[in-house]
Structures are given as structure tokens and as C-alpha cells.
Image (cartoon, rainbow, N blue to C red):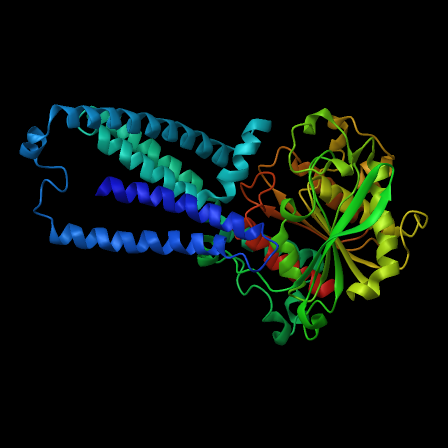
Length: 492
């Protein structure tokens, strides 16, 4: 029975991870499969544990049930014993594989990644740490139980201690989440004033997250917000490519909501060679802010057609071409002109516009937002838009050189566009991110300060790697979302 519960625990944790992933990537509010799976697994573990407890109490003297009846063991046929031995060997090998992989995940979570492959693993290990901690702890208990009596005490204790280290290391981002949140508030207050909380009336604050982290929200996910969504609207067809956008709009035209129809332009990442709007660009984030009264545009732009992304199944072929960074900025500029001509259709407030994106999207959001705000690129951007803020997530400024992509110096390094009157900026940055080394964000903020502009804050996510906002209900994204929604309200 113990084995059954531990296996159920492992499957339940995987189920919650998958359920929340499905929920966060679904545009339609009618799809409830993700939430159903999450809640089924969460409460299933609880209910199954209670049932096991009752069976334990009622059958504690039934030695055969709990595998302690040696006479029962001897009564089994040779065929059954042989099958059990084979199953035991298979389970032990699987448990060892899980144990070694868990140790690797724990190591890079605790001490940081050191190259591209480990960065891919830390996508999962850092933000899904609570789930993985229970998974690998259960795996360790299974391994120890199967090897009890077959190992000497020293080996048994060593494996047990390593198992405890694995679970503790994977929980460390959660353990440090309070420090992360407190540090975030200090950074936010330094940049945007000590009295920023007083700028948010209580009647508006009720629409925001009330705490920077909710454990229940982590497990069960953040409920999807109702909004109106129109997908795949064409805004550019030229150069052998087609570019579309999705728009997320509040219900009832956003009346009475804190966003007041301010505009949020979201630019996807993907290393300038891959990626797409929609499911690969945080759908739940778009819906969240639309429900707060923002008009959210999730846009495409032309990508550099690289052999690196040849096997990519996410990126549409009709967005690829021989494009450099200047071309990508120009495509974003085309969208701003389209938006200026059609703002009334979507109810977008062009006097209050925010640019946001992750990784390469964070770079492009910074470059496009700063260039537009400067007023020096009127041929590229519509001047009818007023940029009120930039929100780059782990921006990859200057990293396109590793992909062989060129462009104008100021677009490759957006810090060169920063001026004393540049719009406020809020940056998400993980301390364990080697793909966009944290020095990039530091240099960006320092340039703000050098120009005499203090309106830039970095929210440092302790032990977070690249794309550590991917899990919408994770501790990193919850903390940043808490400050992001307040940043946008204060500066809209």
C-alpha cells in the first residue's frame, strides 16, 4: 500500500504540473480540462492519503497486506515470485534513474547552470521545484524501501541524505521566495517612490493580487480571467511574409476597471529565429491584464531564417525570412501604424502604451519602446502612441551576435537609446540565468541612472533561470505579477 501511495503521489504531482500548463496555454475559457486535471490530482492525493490512513488503522495487524508476512511470501508460486523479482529490478532501475536525475536538477537549482543543456533543465527545476521535491522524495523512499536489508547502514544513510538534499535544494526557491518578495519591494520603492502604495485606491487594489505569493495558487493555478479574444488579425503582408496579431479586450469595454483601456503590446521571444504569438507567449498573462481593463496585443514580427530553428514546430513558416534586427523593429513599427489607424475598433487608449516581452522579445520591446518614445524614428513608428512604460523579462540585449544577426548599433544595444526622459522600466531577471547574463539588466539600469533617470527597477528572482516566468502560477511569476500590475497602474 505504501508503494501505491508513493506512485500515486508522483503521478499526482506530474498531473498538477501538466494541468496548470494546459490551463495557462489555452485561449478559450471553455476548455476546463487543465483545471479539472489539476484539482483531481490535488484532492486525489489528499483523499487517497486519508483512505490509506484508514486502511492502515483498520488493518494494522494484517501482516500480509503490508508485506510483512513471511509465511505468505513462501506460499507464493515460483512463477509469481519470478515476476515480482523482475518488477522489482525494473522499479529499482527506474528509481535509480530518477534519483540521479533528481540530484542533477537539485545541483543546478542550488548552484546555477553552466551551459545551454543545463539551462533547459532549470526551466523546469527552478519554477516547478515544489512538485519535483515531492516527486523525487517519493522516488527516494521507494528506492530505500526496495533496498532495505540489501544495503549496509552506511550506504542506506548516504542515499537517504542525498535524497533529503535533493528535495531541500528543489524547495530552496520557495524557501527564499519571502526574501525575493521583500527585496522586490525595496527595489520597486527605490525606483518609483516610497509612497507608491498610496497611489493605488482601495477600490482599484481589489483587482490586484493581494499577496505576492499564494501556496494554494501555486498548486491549483490562477483562475483564468474572462475577456474577449480575437485571433489572427493580419496587419502586414509583404517581403514574402505575413504577420498577424491577437487582441485581448476586457468585457463591457473595460468600464470601471483599473486599466482604463491602456494598451499593452506583447512581443514573443525565441532568439530572433523562432517563437510565435499565442500559446508560446504566455496566453494567461494576456488574459489576466485584459480582464483588468487593458487592451493587450500579442504580435508577430519577421524572424531570421536560421538553420538553428529548422526543426522548430512552433514557429510559422510565413514569419521567416532574411531579416535582421532593424527589420524586426520596422515590423513592430508597422504594427504601431496599423494600431494608430484602427485603435477605435479595439478601444485602445494610445495615450497610455506599454511594451513588454521575454528574452529576445524583451530586447525588442526595449528597443522599440525607447526608439518610439525618443521621437527620433517618426518614419518607423507612429507618433500617435505615447509610451508609458517598458516591462522586459530577462532581455537578451546584444546576444543576437551569437546567432549571426546584425543591425543598427542602437537597436542591437537598446541602452544606447536611453535618455533622461525615457519611460519607466520594470525588469524581470533571474540570478541563475546564463542565457541572458544578469549583467545585461544591470548595465541597462545603470545607463538609466547615468542619464539621471531613476525610473528603472530590476526585480531579482533568486535562483531563477531563463524563462522562469513560464509557469504562470509559479513563485517567480506571482511575485513579478504583483509588482507589474501596480507598476502599470501607477504609470498608465
